[in-house]
Image (cartoon, chains in turn cyan, orange):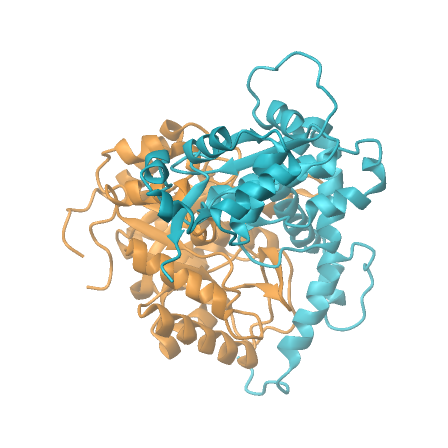
Length: 264
Length: 281
């Protein structure tokens, strides 16, 4: 053991240079202290492990995208994404929050205009899967409310509920058919807008197609609007919506986590 | 007695094996998970881990505390780790002598650093911080090495020994990492094992490795994608003959086989450990 250590700050400079050399494959001749490390064959192991860790995580987190584009395309896109988007947090289960927006700008994906939205649903599934546990409200808890209470009620979406409307693209259908490696569903896809709800009332994430009115209703509930206002929002989007049926569907899906009653 | 003496050989727990793991009644069996894979707010992963934990001792193995970064442990990450420790009351908690997060970016690997006095002070302070927050001792694992540093001021064992002295931490000895590092850096794995401070070893890791696709056997990778290699088993048996039984984990993170295949490897380690009597820790 040497008795004299160089001035403090050397570790910091080392990590600065090492981290830079790690993600920049062009940087084979870095200046500074890491040059003799980068020159060794073993340095590539660190580069490869970091890259593989990111790519494997994206492949696992975006299974419907992966099935649509194939493994080779997926891993190439993931490698490109990882180069500029290292994980911000060390939980790789949630890595890739910006992957959908990345795909929207990714030139090789230009022929697949639905791909970014399929990635958005894969992402919402991840969010629903790891969200806080909450016992969903049962339909009878709402039907049991007195009329004067109903007027003062706000339905709060379930902690795991994630939903989105996709304009002009049947994203729910495309996503559902590609999410699981089960039997292929045959039949043509009608090219029109679709909504989707992903919710985990208990153990498993459920995927449910939503109408435009149902999406508007959930949006209004999430914004804290009273039941009557949320109903108005649903009707504003789809004048013929059946409100009783809409609420029954959402409640039985477990999409509501809490009933707030305004007692003021 | 600081060691969890009721533990024999354990297995890294993979989600696809939850059901089989929960029902398995092998003697002295325990499970270990990577803490980061359970840092979620809720959902089936945590529920499954609860169910396994109800039947078996559990070890939490962190891969991302980044103890050797020239920075304090990330407060949010440490808080998440603490929540897991409080919820699952693990029998063992461990981390690595490595860094992975730098300037807010996580590099999914265990990165090396020059073992200097400056690094010793930093890593020691970081381990101390983690132990203070978790309110328990953690064990520190020796990583695999792929590059040679000119700047080391300490040998790895000397460095770990000094960390134990400064922080009271325990050690996790990964025998596969010892083998991989010795092959890559042309050193003697037996000499390493024979000088490793036996009194502080709380846990042993065993895993498979693979040869680099370009450089072959001259560059071994700690890939955890294969069964434990014969040479690593031989080192393990040599180690246990010297230090006696310690909780030993079979790790597999890629090309994960059926549960029974992993259990067969565990049985071999269990046999080497001589099936220690079950006692309270």
